[in-house]
Amino acid sequence: MLQRTFCIIKPDAVERQLVGKILADIQAAGLKVVAMKMIHMTKEQAQGFYAVHKERPFFESLTEYMASGPVVCAVLEAENAITRYRELMGATNPAQAAEGTLRKKYAVSLEANAVHGSDAPETAAFEMSYFFNALEMVG
Ligand code: IDP
Ligand code: MG
Image (cartoon, rainbow, N blue to C red; front, top):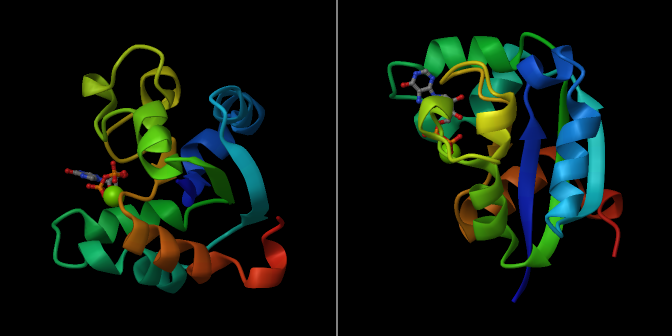
């Protein structure tokens, strides 16, 4: 099933000039970029994006971090894009991420873990529409 998923290259990775490397890995894995932009979120925008986590103890720190610098948002398209991109990202905690995954290669901590990816079709739909309108997605 041709599917779309939502990706963020997080502030720590943008700061360390890893955008090109991460996009190269994403494309090498067969995921096609169909929308992309760089933004610097406000704290409120980060809180809205991560609203699903608002009761979690790390919510305050996470949203502060996501608003701490620019990020690159993208929509990726492929067969089974959601699962494939989650596999490419690796485990949330880079200490547990498998060899070759984006988080193993590029993350610095559990919070500053380089990349975001949607975890299900419903979250992918919400996340894409949070940052992109239909005119901004090609194909
Ligand atoms: P995911 O990004 O792998 O889907 P989630 O559980 O959805 O992981 O958590 C969202 C983000 O919140 C993580 O990517 C990470 O940046 C941060 N995070 C998750 N758990 C913790 C924690 O225990 N401490 C600090 N930050 C966390
Ligand atoms: Mg998640």
